Image (tube, rainbow, N blue to C red; front, top):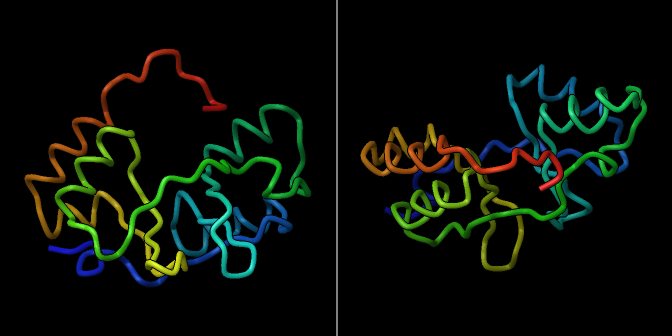
Length: 143
C-alpha cells in the first residue's frame, strides 16, 4: 500500500509569522497536537503543542511569540508514492508519530499519522509504535 492511500488529506497549515496563540487556537479547533508550517507552498517546519509549552511558555515567552521562534525546522517527511510499510518502519526508527506527506514536486499533500497506519496496516503500526515509545537517551527538547 502507498502512503497516499492511508494519509489524511485535510491538512491545516500554520504560517511562520503567525503567533503561537493563533497556532494553538487552530490546534484546539481541530483537536490536533501538531501543525506543519508552510511559507507559501514550501514546508519549512513543524510546530507541536509541546513546542509551544516547552520552547515558549516554559521560557517566559508570551502568546505573541511567532511560530518560527518555536517550531522545529529540521522537518522529517515522506512522499505520497512511498510504501506505507517502509515509512511506518522509518517512523519508529526516527521516533515520530506524524509525518507531513509531500508529492514529488515537494508540495504538501497530506499528513500520515500512526493512527492512519494502524487503520491500514495494524502490524506495521505496532512495530512503529514500539520504536516511537522507546527511550531516546537524554531527553533534549531542542533536538
